[in-house]
Image (cartoon, rainbow, N blue to C red; front, top):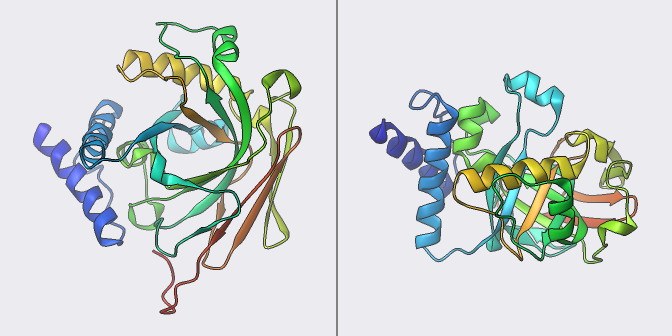
Length: 266
């Protein structure tokens, strides 16, 4: 199985390096444990290359999406510092394969979360502030033809992300009831609220904190946590501009660069 894990990692790394989506990796791995082992291979490679770990992302926080993929819990991936895009800035064409945008609540921590089992109070106390976020997910797997094993191995289909610039203490916002509207080039394309994220974004963060302690990579002070989509994910194309507004948190924008050669993004 170690050979298969290495082969799956190399297939995904090849897609990253070559800018061309690859075949799914579920022919090589089948279990969630194996998929996270592949993700660990990728993480280790990137850390060795000098990338800095800046936080985590939570995926599969929608019950409907969980049913579609056949799982009953979220998944997670790694956020690296070079995945962050300043609010309103442009993502270069081709930087994320098969990009899609989703609006989320981001939490930024000021204390470690290292208990074997956390409470909601632990997470609240550890959180410095919340920010609006747009996560640009991407898939190295051709045509988004993914199962749980494929997306987990592919760093939970992570791409890039943008954060708003106005930090809001948790006491000043109701994350469960906060409404979200996301527009693409001025047209409304996604709506939702905090309850769409496992009933409350803090529920997702609590799941993540406990899970990461079990796997030996606990959340640390300074980490950013993308808690999961508040509404439907939307495909992105060159030239698109997305703006997300979340009640109580403000807004955040991200743009997608055009490919001067005329070639569409992967």
